[in-house]
Image (cartoon, rainbow, N blue to C red; front, side, top):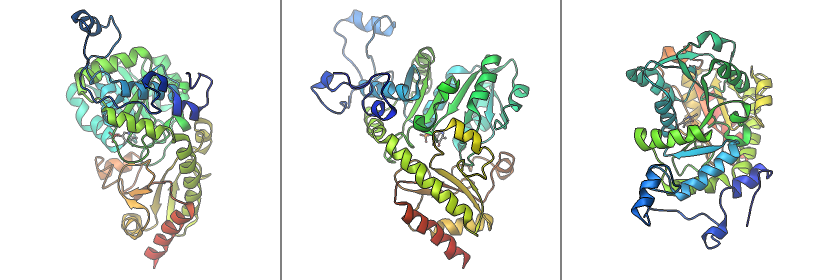
Length: 399
Ligand SMILES: *Cc1c(COP(=O)(O)O)cnc(C)c1O
């Protein structure tokens, strides 16, 4: 039985790729292999597997059959050769950076990043002799001047967490290719349903699968996708020997379950977010809305070329700044005050005091977001209910 082919559409691959029920007694869903280790028929087999001369599992920090289904499925969706599943998005990111970088190397990173990624680069990785430069990659022309012979990795998110700046992946990829360094794109905000960085020339894609890929706020996981050679290196050095951040079989199963509805969920997230972004922009209490699908977004055209739709994340700033933003969050009745994103529930948080408290206030301004910024992860509830909640809260705080 063969469920999908290379020509199958996205939703078909998200449901079927990499798993044949007839291999497992017809079980529609892949078994959850709760095992840490794997028996060898003979000692020779074990030695050959350790030497890489024979295929097969040896220990679940290095590979697990449930995780393998997830890895092959995500690789197919991102149009990459191979993938490595990890215990979290930060596990994916550290596997990449700690494997690829040596003391003396440099990283160039876009100036707005998820808070813990920023903190890793701003406060910690220097201890290992790696230098970091933060550059505004929304202007790819700024990249060549920042590159040096020591630059090994260029890292960006797009749209960037939390302020929705959009980076031209193809333009950056071309500059990196000529300079001989690797472009790593954190594709968490988009998922492969909306944007496929490898097809635009990036070398590696990382994800927090905790967010849209899982989609239900019930797991932590990460993924890296890229060439077979890179993924082998990340698996056998990055996760096996450097960070140990292997995915659990149960979490791999849960991400696979989430993937089955990824295309449906992303369509709805995008539709509702686009309508809410317009509603919020028109509200008198709102100073600014950052959403790549709005005509007011400075990179609206680029986002339209690079993304299939504009995503489910919105950033907004109220006219009353931080105090008004906090009052707004407290006045919401349906949207839940919580960090994370990409869940069925609409989540609202305050980056400056929560996810991005790793930036000090001067850094926040320099890196492009204010203390008053509010981040909204638009969920799957009815649009009308969300609209009433958001506009109702704005009206209540204005009184
Ligand atoms: C959440 C997030 C991460 C970190 O992922 P975890 O699964 O929480 O470790 C990395 N990048 C982005 C863009 C994120 O939103």
